[in-house]
Amino acid sequence: MRILDPHIHMSSRTTADYEAMYGAGVRAVVEPAFWLGQPRTSVDSFIDYFDALVGWEPFRASQFGIRHFCTIGLNPKEAGDPRLTGVLDIMPRYLEKDGVVAVGELGYDSMTPQEDHAFAAQLALAVAHELPALVHTPHRDKLAGTRRTLDVVRESGIAPGMVVVDHLNEVTVPEVVDSGCWMGFSIYPDTKMDPTRMVAVLRDIGLDRVLVNSAADWGRSDPLTTRRTGEAMLAAGFDDDAVDRILWRNPMEFYGQSGRLDLDPTRQADAAAPAEFAGNSIMRGARA
Ligand SMILES: [Zn+2]
Image 1 (cartoon, rainbow, N blue to C red):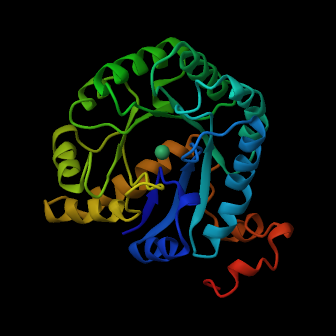
Image 2: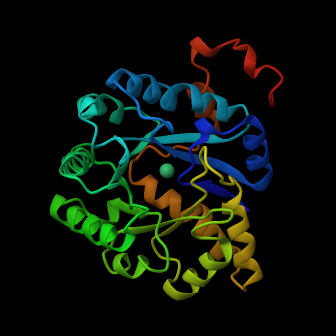
């Protein structure tokens, strides 16, 4: 089983997670820019974080045989903070970088006017840079939030096929299924969507434009829920090709629209050995 996890926050995970993911078949990940658990107080904190997403974390992943790509964005939880609106001004220079395969994650948390502004501005950046957009749906008031999210996407003029609407469930997916947008599902160990429920959704809506991710971060989460979903699909009668489509070909197709999803391992070596990390002692003893 080969897996591209299209939404996982590896900065918050351990090297043991990377090893377990490789063992489970994960060969590539997309790490969306998000918050750090506590609010950042300045744009400079984002610069350091974005630099880590395009430099340090791909190098760390490469030690474990995993290709690392990222998305760059002002996340929904911080989009309403007036100290951070300048993040929108520094984003364009990151959106030009090789490992950046989308804008995001962006979208609503509390659906405030400030969030409206950041949401629309970032969809405009996605259009201007010809990149896909990763749109998060709010965890509270999810149905209304998903409807309003789709309205903003439509008004932006971005092609629906360039958008994934993420963190969907059985209640919100009917809103998105006819929109032309991709549908993202985050599979958690014991809350929200689980592998069994995901299989039922796949039976219902089919395999088109569906992405399955672990969304693992600092909270209780499991970086192997992609694999567990593949196993649940097989147990339910889906074949290997269907599993490969959901866990590999679909995310390749979606993020491939960036033109930057380059999995050539010979180029990984070049990209993953920035001089400033050479000889970094914490990587010694990791997978050669
Ligand atoms: Zn996320």
